Image 1 (cartoon, rainbow, N blue to C red):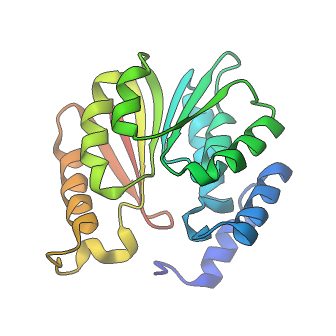
Image 2: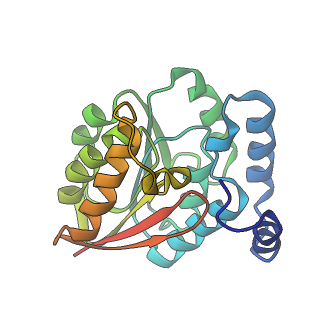
Length: 213
């Protein structure tokens, strides 16, 4: 679903910073070899993630949902020199692909990929985060949020992807559509939870920026 015309989307992308060479290569290889390449953050959203990270200048970053590693590398661009990024994904088949690009980047040694259930892995990380990006199974967004908030430094930022869900958040809910049901509840939660303040940006499929007080 396009929220603005494709022509305007192209204009926006063409008037935003170009993606780095390594990310362009990752983008191309993802589309050539990996199923569901639409899950990739891509050029424009990737530059948004990079810019937000550079503004925040985080020391510790957590990403929930690695896919092929594009967003992780974008977020790493704003990381402090001694910073570290933990990224979690449950898909074993993508792990070697991710590692290839992490190791080819200037952030090799500062990004650790975790394989498994994020709800089990997150409590073991034992650190405070400045920036978190949630882009995994929508059914667990609320669970991730409630687990993460106590692990955030004051003023830390939680980014949540796909919160417009191709416009389904405005449609009549199907009893079988758990993902949309949870996203509607999640959007309401992060807008009303007194521990945070949130703005929803209509970027691609919806991106919320949530600041922990």
